[in-house]
Picture 1: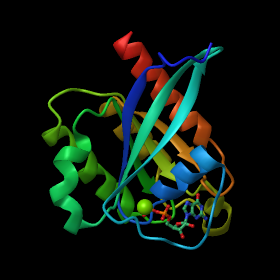
Picture 2: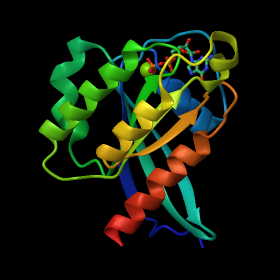
Picture 3: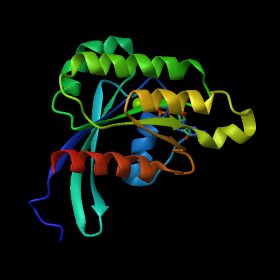
Length: 177
Ligand code: GDP
Ligand code: MG
């Protein structure tokens, strides 16, 4: 039953610029996608109820950060109180993978508590066109070492987007319950 007692969790999405963080949120929350790039300024957030088990749901407050260095001063309050994190990179741009690792270590240095994390390799729809640029087994190994779940998504087609959020929600619920 959906009632007003529904638990709410803060979830954050981080990663380098233009990897598709805002697009993943728009796909997940509004089931929409736009190819036009609109820079996220500062911090934005969206809310969505997730049914993590039949007839069991929680509410997610998903915070979206601008990837720009100049917003670094916001990071501390951005991370504060987060119950889970999505860390995204772009499967079509090699350097976003190493940059994503920096985001993860920054998060670890700021947050004192361990929270469930999902690493997202986004833009799978481009792989048939451009080929596989990033070594998938290296990403999987990295995710395993960091105790993160790894999923490859496309905000454009919607592939695995629900899965990424559902997996994170299930891990959060498991941790608190
Ligand atoms: P952010 O800076 O990480 O929030 O990235 P955006 O969500 O603004 O997306 C950056 C650009 O990548 C935009 O032009 C999007 O349309 C595009 N984009 C995002 N996700 C995908 C995807 O899954 N596939 C493709 N082909 N383009 C994407
Ligand atoms: Mg954005």
